[in-house]
Image (cartoon, rainbow, N blue to C red; front, side):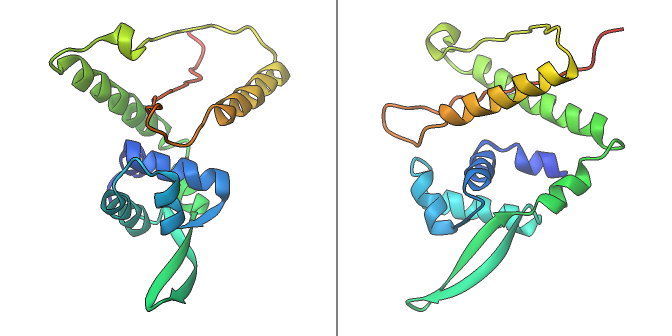
Length: 169
């Protein structure tokens, strides 16, 4: 099995995981309806990869008109199993390298236009207590969910990454 984060950090697979995180469980057909801007065959291929690597699991199966419809859910146990202190540095590195590769691909393209595409980097130091930071994270989560709209022709996917880094010594 490949590194779990290499598997999960693919943009299509991340959208599948995010969609399931909101709804708890869905059929592949429902996922295809929610992520309608990605071809159905591509979604099924990525769902298979997530299933093959135990990131998703089948929680029920039902025969419908001669085909088997499976209801899927995130296998949080598998993800938590890899989210250990021993794997922390490797996980952070995989995450950062994936972001680096995305920027490298973007800027190596023929005509990158960061202003038009609203590409930016930001670093902010917050002075908070643990309780205040927990409140900030809760509100940030609500804000991200509020603006997580379904696909339409007017909308484009925007990859937002937020990192809480260790304090510099």
